[in-house]
Image (cartoon, rainbow, N blue to C red; front, side, top):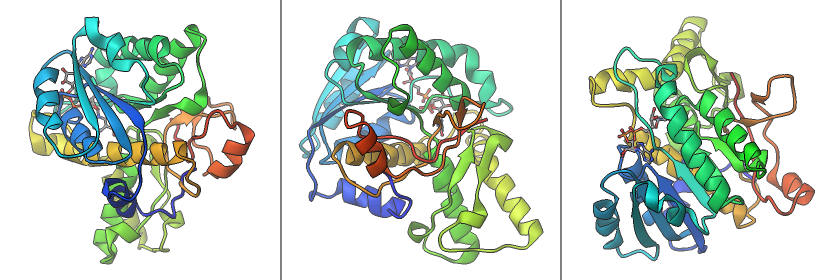
Length: 314
Ligand SMILES: NC(=O)c1ccc[n+]([C@@H]2O[C@H](COP(=O)([O-])OP(=O)(O)OC[C@H]3O[C@@H](n4cnc5c(N)ncnc54)[C@H](O)[C@@H]3O)[C@@H](O)[C@H]2O)c1
């Protein structure tokens, strides 16, 4: 039960404070990568996490050893290569998947499909076999395609629950909040822009008219703002000039979404997040839903105490 009323920065700060406790086992698949390492650091720093399971095909012993020296309660274990994938996933409550190749200048997210589809399918299948009840949070692009892939793999294994599969699109919301705040001279932590649709170019639809607090822009400025939000990932890809795509801001966004899911698993009310999820509301299978109140969802299905929210579609 996620609420846009919970300010992102407040949410992350609360999750990093010592006031709340949880015993969640969280896995990061692709933990050695540009997103995986800072994301793992943020998760290690949270009292909501009791065990951090780090999996990658490279460098996980080093990343796990490094993080394990941080004086927070989460126990850290590293798993390297396909032979250790099953062990990495056993008993996990939440699995975050940033594994996959990122964009280089001139590439669209769809150009990643061939490589990342196989990676995500393999990792999703391992989730289905080892932790079928876990919340699966997919960061790997193209999110518009990796969520249908994860869903179909889960279905094939007979463990698909649409309330447990999320495309992480939080970075679109984080960017929209930041850019609106910059233009209006507001504190970004107090700005909340819902973003619906998909996670690629024009399929990213920021609902500026639904922003809290209410903001207005002249038509030309609005058009420029929307284009910037839609192309913000490409802005980073160009600036990194071949060294990858957004990693630090994505780690922040991924941690924020993970903490919201953990809050929901802990029964916290009034939490809303946007995400790319399966929806039955139109003929489009994966789309935006309105921002459902978690309380209603939990009472409808006590065994799956989390859901999205403000889902996204292409
Ligand atoms: N959802 C979003 O908003 C968003 C934003 C930015 C990037 N991304 C996506 O996140 C993904 C990762 O980006 P990055 O910058 O961290 O890339 P990266 O290349 O820095 O890291 C990827 C990691 O995945 C690992 N990996 C590759 N194949 C694997 C496998 N089969 N199993 C486990 N691990 C494997 C690599 O060893 C590497 O450590 C990309 O697909 C990128 O497009 C998504």
